[in-house]
Amino acid sequence: MATQKSNKARTYARNRPVVSRKGLENVFEPDGVYLFKLVVVTLAGLMWLRLADPVMIGGVLPVGAFPAGAVIALVLIAWLEHAQFNRKILYAVLVVVTIIGFFLNAGIVI
Image 1 (cartoon, one colour):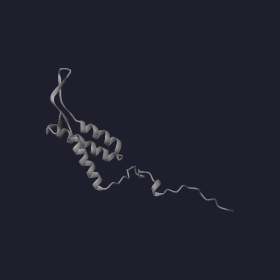
Image 2: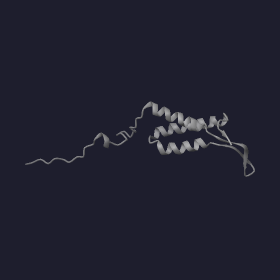
Image 3: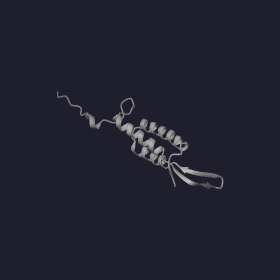
Image 4: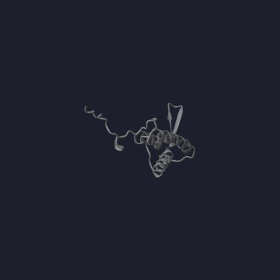
């Protein structure tokens, strides 16, 4: 009697999923790349468009600044960052730096 071979598909390194068996992400990047991302997010959070004369919305709410860098950074983080844990950290850094940037009066005055 001849035994039959089982035709199991082999899993090579290039075909392995990004998620491990425990459900953890296996995304590794150099420290320099991560530090560069943090610096870019920090600088983006400090970019405010400030108005020389505040605009009144509805006659009640004066708007004197707009966080343009934070909005652009939010879109870029959501679009470019694949690891969920890294996205959460970058979002937290962006929110904190944006709030600090508002009180530092950092930005471009139009």
